[in-house]
Length: 380
Image (cartoon, rainbow, N blue to C red; front, side):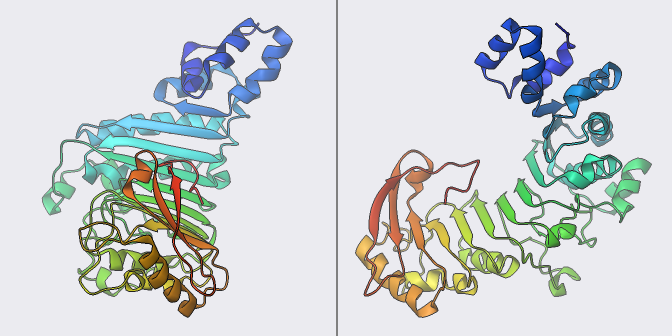
């Protein structure tokens, strides 16, 4: 029975069930050879993994890898973090068929753009770069932070300044599914160079992206009022049909959030918004709360926060059904099947769901019990 170095075994262990490991350890050479390709569908990449793969000649196994994860941690030592990152990325030259790449990093927020740009710059020379169809960017802000200014930028190493000034770096060009969390700058274009640090470039995906999941503290950038960003004609993503937006903090400007989503992804068919209940302004109706959804003419299914009376209890189901039902019919959605309004408890365990359908004569809110997953598929 062939043996593998522990670095390679450790790179796949987190994806395997204990029964898988027991079965392989007890199998014959024939079964071992049959099972291994299926075990190596997903892999965690590190500097040690890259070294082991590079020196081992395991192309018979690495050709089967379809999903790769790069993890890292930086405590304000950006040069060291990028060195480790580039070393890990080199394993991808031996993984030609990877279709999904996940980059998960813990670092100070200002380092975010450099980390992703350095990753894209490194992997662009490998075969899998053109084959990537799914990309997950998971950024966890570290405890240390500082503000970038002119002096801070000039004090960066020559290598990082070179990365910052390389306008050819971009997101892999054939991405169809994008999962973004913890982004410091939530502009979907990321073509803006007016920021004091460069941003990840998603613009090349405008002609390929079909599904997107965004988890952020703010959809509208805090620098939106600064020139030249203020007058930019930001891109729309016409092929996107599925949008899942997660708001981690309560916001009062939820109208602008809906407007931004609808403007960027006008052909959305499946839509999900997750955040603590929307507070209605005094005198507004439930229909006015979601007025910007009228721009989504192809909308089929949606999961939205259950409207409230100010900060008080959720609107009573029959009232919700009446106001939203009339609103839905007036907008004349051609493909709409239903809108589910969910309580916050749906994300914690099991909660109430009020389903509204654009039916005649009048849709009354149909109450269901449901729990919603916070990861994986959208749940529609």
